[in-house]
Each structure stands twice: as structure tokens, then as C-alpha cells.
Length: 400
Image 1 (cartoon, rainbow, N blue to C red):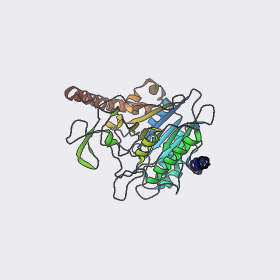
Image 2: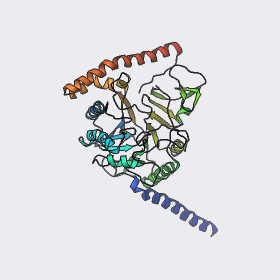
Image 3: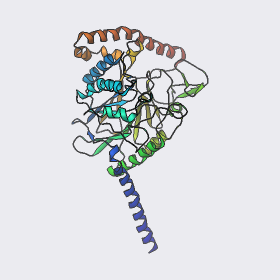
């Protein structure tokens, strides 16, 4: 009798726990977009754009290159991860947002936005003010989470099957903040981490299986320094810790690496457990960030790829020819995997398809300028990587 009673109580307890998980999953539907869908061929392509820093001196060239990238890549979704267009007034910022968003609006490309440290730092307007600018466009699927969570722009984008509304993949969008009270870079806050934990568990319970996903935000997680190799001396392509310049970091041969490290990763100072929560849950395959303009790399650590994408703008100088964008490919039939590649402006403008798309005198002048300035920078960086490999045996440049 006692054993039967215990069994009944256990079943009731399990039911209560399961119901609580499902209730939480449904309680914050306001932070979940309408599902997108895999294509008929099972594919889904994301264009990751970050750190456009649009101003008077670069907006025309940068948005034209982004438009050409959209026409070349034909993405299903564009994700913008902050430091996009911050001017002195909200009216001036609205002009820049319009120049950027018209690229996607005119092409009917769904666009998801979150913010970086510069998007509202001048105090003339709030992140909510800026989000309202983006959400004025029909192509925006972004969510202002209001008072529900810290910041503005933390939400979930589910990707459903090609032929049903069954969730097959999740895209986690986070506002990683700007600065803490002491002036350091911020990080995803505790309440956002808890929201992810509960929402991830709820998604698994609702679908009867773990739903894999990717995370997107502006500022890289502090664990990047655990994934790199620490030295107490400087070598070629090693960089000091952002908060301790007596320690130097470089790619570790013990980990799987991608791309090239060109500057120190600028993570938040305080760690609120976001990466640890994702590693524990096991559903996030990679975290994609911006913030560090010249870094285009990935490091696999505790089963998660920590990935940084290039600034997506063109400033008219030599190194900005090496800025660009990232493409991420998903396959409905292999939801535990993804593919990614970096495209730099110099390589982009030398492609045949871009030459065919460029149809104006201004296009030709812009492309010629990138080719001229970019030649030196591209081959100088390649020479440096080969030089280090030959004389030290270290690999500092991996396939993107």
C-alpha cells in the first residue's frame, strides 16, 4: 500500500514539474517570434552582420556593399548584433537606421536586431527608442522585451520544419549590454541566463527532444580566455588579457580553431554564467559575437564554438578591405551541425558574381578602391602568418 502511495505521489510530482516547465515555456510567448521555416530543400541561410558603425563618412559605401552581399548570398534571415548606427540625436540615428534597413526591407529579408555597447551610450535616447526605429520596418522580426528582462533585444527565433510547424532549431538572440557600473564591458545578465535555462528546458519538454540552436550577441563571453593558450610573455599574434595585461593569449593547439586572432577579445568583466548554462544544457552549438572588429575566428571549448565575426562596414582605408560578413548554413536533416564561412570585402569584390551585379559608375569606383587598398593588406597578413609558421612552428591562421 505504502509503495503504491509513493508511486502515485511520484507520478503527481513529475506531472507538476512537467506542467511547470511547459507553463514557463508558454508564459513568455511575447519573447518568442513567429516560427521561421527551413526551405523546401531543407536549408536555412543566415547572414551575420555586426558593427556597421554607420556615419556620414561610410554609410553610403557600407550599405551598398551590404546590399551586394544580400543579392549574392540570398539569405533567409539577417541577424544584426549591435553597434549599428548611433548618432547624436534619435532623429539623426533614424536616418542611419533607414539607410541600413531599406537594404533588407526592399528585398523582403527578415531581419533580427540586438544591440552593442555603442547603440545607446550617449544618453540621448534609450535602446527601446532605437528598437522602435528598427521595428517600424515590416522586415524586422525583432522583439523589445520591455521590463521582462535586462536590456532590450533578448528573444528566441524558432525555425520550424520545411513542411510543418514542428520546431527543428532555435536561434537565441541576447542583448549583452553595454557597460557595468564600474565602466567595464557588460555581459548577459543573470535574469537573461535564467530565461534561457527555463526556455531551453521548456522547448525540450514541449518537443519531446533537445532542440539544437545557435546564440547571437554583441560581446564575447569571458570563457574565450579559457579556450585560448595563456603565456606570460608576448609572441607574434598573441594579445594581452583585456583586464590583465601581464598575461598574453593565443590560439591553443589543444583546441579546434578557425580563422585568425587579430586583437584581444573584449569580453565583459563579470561573468553571470551564460556560457556555463549553455554548456550544461548542451543545446547551443555555437555563440556568434561581434564587438572586436578585426577578429574572425572560432574556438571550440566545452562542446561550444565561441565565434567572432568581422565588422561589416567599409571605411575607405586599407584594413577595412578585410572587414566583411559571415554566412551560416543550417540543414533540417542534420540539426546538430552547422556550416559557416567568412567573406572579406577584398575577396568579395573580386568574385565574378559581384562584378556582374555592380552596375553603376559609383559601384565600379568603390570596387576598384577596395581592390587597390586590399591587395597589400590581404597578402601582407598572409605573409605574416606563413612567416610565423616557418620560424616558430605555430599556426596562427586556420581555415575560416
